[in-house]
Length: 375
Image 1: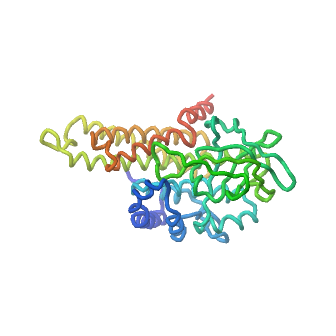
Image 2 (image 1 turned 45 degrees about the horizontal axis):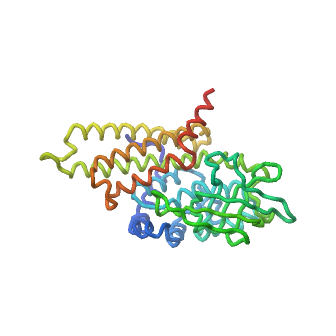
Image 3 (image 1 turned 135 degrees about the vertical axis):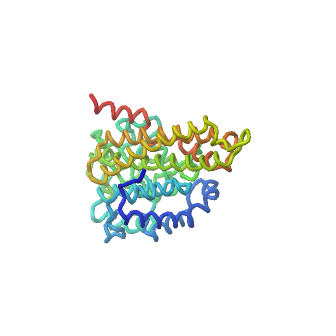
């Protein structure tokens, strides 16, 4: 079914992204997975090509493109190319809006130009050990002192935590309200812990971070003091749409791989795609993917129009990631024993897909959000 949400300029952008990834990302898959992170030189090249921070105003090095369809194209093409790393989804879809929407003019002058040049990597630290998806259970504290605050606490599951130069840290003040602070990783008392050894997404560096009386000057408060919870929640819809977009694209990529395999692999004298059980499985996956794609595209259209609610974004994230994992799991099954071999891309898609139902809010949290909106 033909998609109707993109304009000609989006398709030209897609062609540029596809060419760039085939040249600069795909050949480095094994290297980046082995290193546990994407090489920073790739990020600088992506910035030179105009793929980093394009939402930022032109005076700060961006293109002023506030249209999430461009973000979606980057996320989709990463999936279609079977490229690794979450740099685009983190920095463009999640981090950049915080800097554009919440930073004051001085902060934008300091942070956005190096960000759009690919020289500055920014992480967001929300989750804490034992906290899960409940932001209200946050225990990292921000104690007021002369000229700023002292931050103490620990964060975990921080994407790009090892490579980050700045970290947006959510912490609780003396009044119990949450604020956002931009912390330089070179600040005294700030420590990067171990790079976490995950089941999948091996090229995405994920870390623990520790803060022990880290001084943050008043100039590095991001947004309004005490309004951090609202600021975090206001950006979650786009974050979850980013994950929904990726999920739909990964499911499509997995099915494409499996169709090729099923038409080449022979059993009982004919390609396995000609066996009814396999055809039925392929038909079911195609139908689920098509329904997921239609829902995600409609939500994407609503996001661009400023009409997408948090509940709708949660539903999109819930449905698309559940479909993604069912599809990828079935695709691996159709590959048989070869699907469990690392040299087959479906194996990596399978292990990389599992976390989609967890991060950005678990499927159970998404159900709770949608359910509460109904009563």
